[in-house]
Image (cartoon, rainbow, N blue to C red):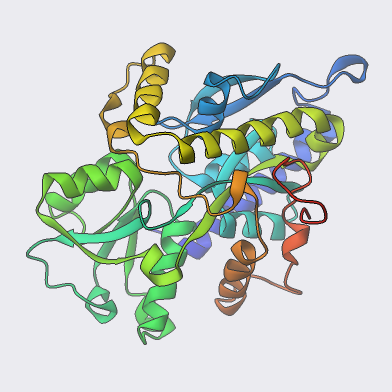
Length: 344
């Protein structure tokens, strides 16, 4: 398996190359005829789960804007690369992955937070009950399974290992394995990996089945924070500002709807959405839903949610040249939950 850094560099290079080709040929559904703004947004979903835009659409919060599902994706970096290259109109990823793609000159901007960690919803690093792994040093030479490399799970893990006293050389001996989210728990139980990174409903389902225990969580390490954002290409935003505004505000309203409704009401709505869309999915995961974990009201983004990862990436040697400013990476100006002067 190639190193994570090499894999990420190749992926980013491919994304930037494709982006240049897309711009040169004038492709993209956002080039609405006669200057009209598009009302259809292409996106990728997640198997057995309901995204916030899907929830917003079902609640009627997107107005005239319609979503067009073009397939599923297992990791954020691939999702935002698809957006940067014009294959989709929006995508979501860990904020550190957004920093990396922007550092590779991809013209994308984060507009609304969509997931995070709090006391109810977080990413945990789990081992089998009989595992000898308890602390950072126990992971040397072990395999850690996660949904994608170069994203949230890897950044949090390496931060924890570094704070636990491991040197860069020792951290490099911890083997990272990318697995589809629905297969990570099974791989842990079958002893194909030593540690499983589990979040949200997938984590709760694994814990309910028993036989696993927590080593640490991102919430324990960092406190409550929004971890990822939805992005649009900058040219799409320029051509379709009101469409972006409708999307951002709709997602923000969906976040607050889910935050204020009884848990049973939210779960029933998620199950209904899965049943109606007819993708032949198992709806059992959404029954473990607890919260979106988004820290800011209506998905508002804060500087901290980017500076944390800018500093980490710079310290790891992943950023060349000047560090980007958080306000160059995101904006709250399309979010109606932003107070006067509070949006970047």
